[in-house]
Length: 238
Image (cartoon, rainbow, N blue to C red; front, side, top):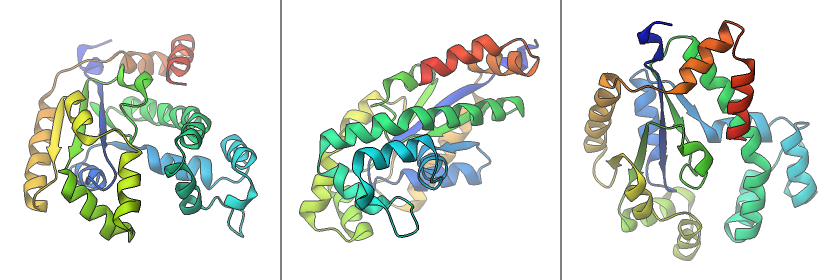
């Protein structure tokens, strides 16, 4: 295997509710970065597909009252339940995260096989899902100051201050996430300032020469000799 084939790595992107993670993720996509969005995977693979195992488990534990008339899960209603009840939030995560990670793993392998030098994993609960961080070479937190976060959330979701504060409190504090990250994008200011920070981050990733075992696993799988290794990686991520 040539050295250049091993120069692949994973980047974790996270933030807090209304911190601007989606803005940064979209900017990275526009720059040509491969991004796997865990929320999109959850919506497409778990919630929209009415007969998926995760869908059935969610309905079994939360009841048919969370369903819309067409049978799909009412994400807003489910959101109200989990944001006000930490135990139910942990239950939902335990039901969905294994399936989400399996789908993301397949997409990661696909990007590596197509020759990408790195893949960005957009994961809201990145640091809460400790199993995933061990595979990441870089972690990026999209930060904004608490007052800005509260104001944006109230305006975006049309929430009262009490409702917004409850949703923010349900997550790991942004200051704590910032301390765990290898890169921070401060989204407290203007869109232009955030875009400049994204450009600097993109340049650093493009210049990086980091390595990750996942690339070797992907190449081995493509040549038909890595089934056991891939299975082991799946077990670690699930």
